[in-house]
Length: 255
Image (tube, rainbow, N blue to C red; front, side, top):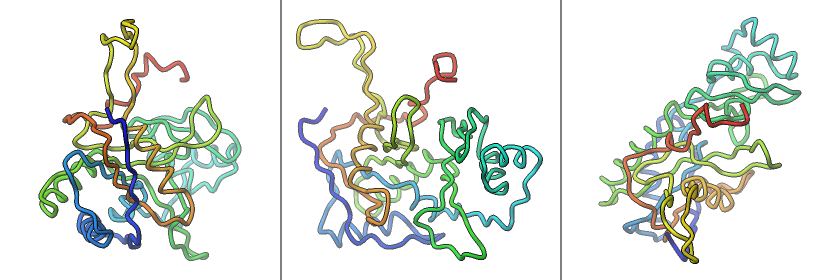
């Protein structure tokens, strides 16, 4: 693991539209920022630009809410059309209160409102849109890694991050929705600490830790820094993706 980590935002990154080639935009932005990818570099992308490029927009006017959505909308005090999209993107509803519906997303992670968002998207007041999470965040990360390999001559490790709350803490932090080229977990079980004590449960979620660090640079409002180059992390290469971070249901003490 690294003793020194650099987090370099790609300044001047353009607004992303449906159908845009993210790899080409990142390649151009690296050149604009006078950066060249090096072995071991990790690119952390805000989920929103991936969703925009994949045209994961939905017009609320096109959504017809069902009975379950109408029921939950009353309980959560939310637009029934938005609730229907939340249900469509979810495997299970876990908790409901005014303003929020906690669900198990269809990709397996627990998320408020299925990660559906209205911030930082251009909207007409009379025809509102929302933005869904990527169809398959791990596949998106793998595809981007391959495309960047063609353009840049090497394939960086890739993390797609999003901000999420935690069951036992206030506030949000960045977490890895999708990864490619890196092991999202650093299994140290069986090793020893500085005093020779055997490690029994130590397994840092390094993809989430790096996602959170990059999120601090990206910001949550009008910063316009959706791509961060992380240099020096020295994460282990792996074919595993972010699904390795999902806690098995039988081990989940919060559901």
